[in-house]
Image 1 (tube, rainbow, N blue to C red):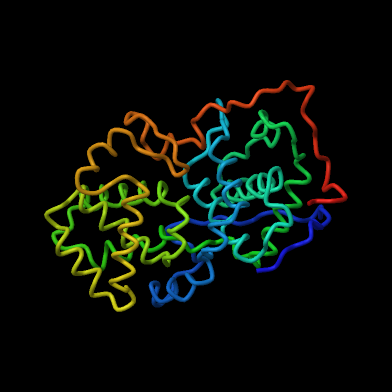
Image 2 (image 1 turned 90 degrees about the vertical axis):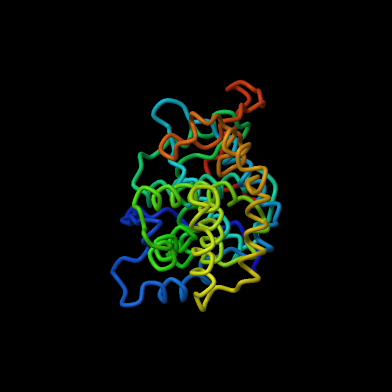
Amino acid sequence: MATEEWELPEEDAAYDYEFEFDLENPFTSPADEPIASLLDAEAHHAPSVSAAASAARRNAVAFISKVRFGGELAVHPRVAYLALNYVDRFLSKRQLACEQQPWPRLLALSCLSLAAKMQRVATFSIDEIQRNEDFMFDAATVRRMERWVLGVLEWRARSVTPLAFLGFFLSACYPPPRHPPQVAAVKTRAVDLLFRAQPEVKMAEFSPSVVAASALLAAAGEVAAGNLPAFQAGVAACPFVNSEKLRECGEVLAAACGVGPGRAAASADTPVTVLGHHRSASSASESDWTIGSATNGRGGGGDAKKRCMGPPSQWG
């Protein structure tokens, strides 16, 4: 993992984003063996443990978690999920010269912007998202950082995440009869668990396929407990699933999400977002989730804010 000098690429007027993809179906064209293609790709898209444990990653997550959106600036949970995946993948290949703010915030800003474009959601205001910060980056700098991130990712913006494996495990391993409402409920709960567990550092120790299987089994244990033994057997029969890793991942996920025997009911009453904030049960829907519901305690008026119109001569 290299330490990158802070030399952002010059902005190219012709540079634009023409990407769009579904996190559950990241490939542009159907593959003859979809699961084989996913398994081949997952190693290139999973974060490293050292990156997940870095101070830069913690600071990037902290910024995303406290961002407050109002009115039209609502951000879908999948945008936050994809943005943090970009942060993890970037830090797995590059070590920031300075891991303290505001530079991890610039990385988080650019990854949020990229993720919003990839998910085809309304673009948010760079000024608005930083309104409580003492040091602000302008849109041109964020855009240049986006280009650097894409370059480090080798322009592989179609991330293969645990969400991409949900369909396979449900279609290949879930026991019959597969009642659509029940299967949909298991999937919805698994997605919620994946969002909530993503910031946990230890989740980086497991491949996306194992993380997906663990989330589905945990969800089935809550939603369809009667089908859990057969579902577990089906998952265990998959030749690419390591049973020991599956067990370990299940334990980490349960601890991160506060689920499991004796804790599931309490967790349902106070669900936790992908970034760790507790929310009321009435607002737990994925569709109305916004990044960071906690109040930002930082003060400071507009006169105290400093705008960064480009990378300073020294970036740490």
